[in-house]
Each structure stands twice: as C-alpha cells, then as structure tokens.
Image 1 (cartoon, one colour):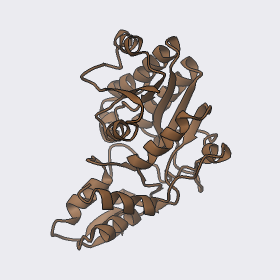
Image 2 (tube, one colour):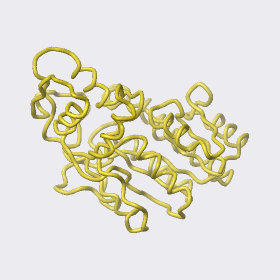
Image 3 (spheres, helix red, strand yellow):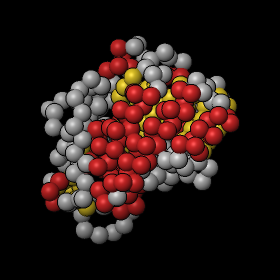
Length: 281
C-alpha cells in the first residue's frame, strides 16, 4: 500500500516510517508541507496519490497551546481539515491521530469511544475541532485517540525520567493523582498496521492495556532501568501548569475489541520490551 505519513520526523512518525517499511512510504514534515496551507496540502496529496494518509502532524506542546491558541487551532484544526479535504478529493483513506485531551477527565472509569467529549485545555479543544473537521469532510476516516505516548528518541515523560533518574539529588516528586495508559509508539504502529487491513471507520481508542499514575509509571521506569534515585508521589496541585491535565486519561479500546482485533499489549510488558530494545530511550 502507498502511505503518506505527515509529521514523519515526530516521535510517532519516525516509528511509523520504520515499522511500516513493508509498504511504499512517503514521509513529510513541516519542511516539505505546511498543513495549514490548503493549496500546499492539495499539491502534496495530488502529486503522490497515496492510498492512505496517516496524519500525525500536530501542535502537541500542551502548555504552549495555552499561550498560542491561534497557532494551535491553525495546526490541529485547520491543518486536519486541509488533510481531510485533500484525502477525500484524491480517494485516500485517512487515519488521523488524536488524544485523550478531548475528554474532561472526570469520569470514574476509562473512556470509551462514544463518551461525550469536553476538553478543558486549548490543546484538547483544537484537537477536538480537528476531529470534527475530519468527520465532516472525509467519510473514509479513522480517528485514533492515543495517550501517554513515548517512543525511541523522545521527547516524552519516559525520557525525562531516565535523565532525572540518572542524576544525584533529592527524591523526585511525581504526580500520583492522574491515571492513564502508558503506550509506546511501537505498540501504536503495530496496531495501526492491523487497521490498514480492516474496513473500520470512525473513532478508535489505541492505548496499551492496564493503567497507572504518572508516579507508578515513573517507579516502573526506575525499576526496569535500575535507576537509584528515589521517587515520591505528590498531588497535581503541587506542580501547577498553564494547561489543565485530565485527572482521568484512561481509554478503553472497545471498538477494536468489538471488531475482533487483538488486544494491545499490557503497558508494563510494553515498557519492559522498550527499555530492553532502547535502554537509553
């Protein structure tokens, strides 16, 4: 299959370019195409005529989105709209990456795909607007929501922990009142490849099985990497940030399970495999 990957030099994009190497891949990033420019996007897709577009390009700096809302919406909303319109015009299937931040984060259970959205940050609102644009303009789409992502080369929470854990100093405090599903780019890429052969459309959740707090995630990173620095739990309000973080980022992959697709790997097994293959992150 001929696949065009936007954001191909980002953390997920790099992994997709490696893991999907059995396909004919075209990788583009900001140097090759400005997704906020409709003409640029149409020229890109019309010249390559991919069978599928995997759209990973996004403005993902959550706190920066709060201070640059126009840029966040230009990239995450208008950029997705442009990709969707060009994809449908040239008969390409669209697989777009979205986020747990489209939810309010106040449920007492994992979110399923049909739950009501309610983003509390500029990043979340801009990504939800992008989801809506994709639904409106490109019927042949999948919106894959992921969360707590890490991958080879980073940047990610895991890479920050590996760096800080190797330093001497006072015990590290890590938030213990936010829940999510740590998930590697390798696990997401493997699942996306399965979806290439499936006729699914609409929203799917795509995170590793099991759940953790950031503190529990950090503890497991330190254990597996044999890092001696102590890590202690703390509350979110001890580390105020410009953008609010969802207290509950857990996503349940109900659509893929209902479709009979294999369950994704447990996050602890995924992390152990990752640190074996990439001990430096």
